[in-house]
Length: 296
Image (cartoon, rainbow, N blue to C red; front, side, top):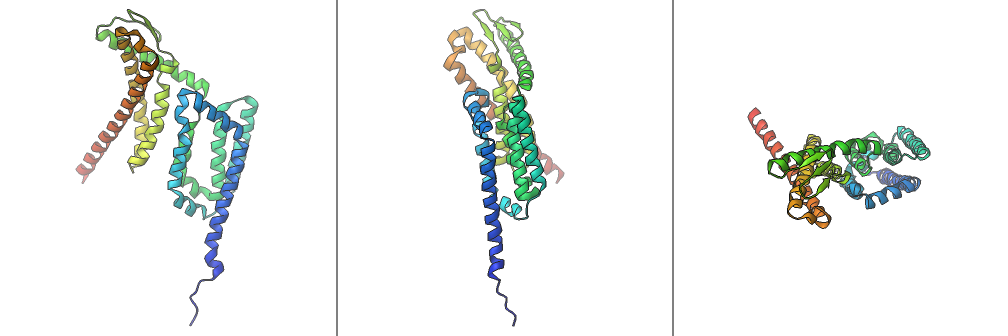
């Protein structure tokens, strides 16, 4: 009778492949972080000091946690082998970093890290690994501040919209106000809707949280895109409401428009925006299930 025992060499082959892949990822990861260390440290400092990017500190943590949750699929995909195309992507990332360094362009330097990371995964694990980790890689984009030229083009319209809504609302409730651009002239004082009050901070944070929320609380992948789009008007309207409330409160007590009260109001309104996002999700799901029941 022929023996059915498995050869020890064949039995250890998957384990050897696994160890080789894991060691390769660790070594390549260490080299990648070493190469981009100046870029990453400067990015970390901006997270800690720029209030608009306060959420950036949590982005790599959450993206890594989601990747860790899918580690079995990642290892299974990586076992199929890598692709030399990843080396081309890594080299492109290095070239972009060089151009960014010579031109002092922070956005290009920071996105070069994400490109190089994707290239390393493609090189070591192949396209199957990229597909498994696609969502985590996409989330990493939210840790990079948007370019200053785009930032300025976004904040000014947001400032004007918030001040316009506040002007209309305050006049409707009987508080006279004269608006000049983003300046609100109230009977007791002048309120300036500055960049910090444009709503860009809550817009960026809420957009990131909308994707994370959809990932953990809804299995439908299309829901992530829907909530991401929904987060934009929610953040804008909530911020306009905040400016209006600031105008109302300042008429009763001037110091309520500054300092601790102003900061606390911002946190409260952000929680309101989160609640609105959750309610929007439930409404969309209710309509979705109603339509599915009608079709069946």
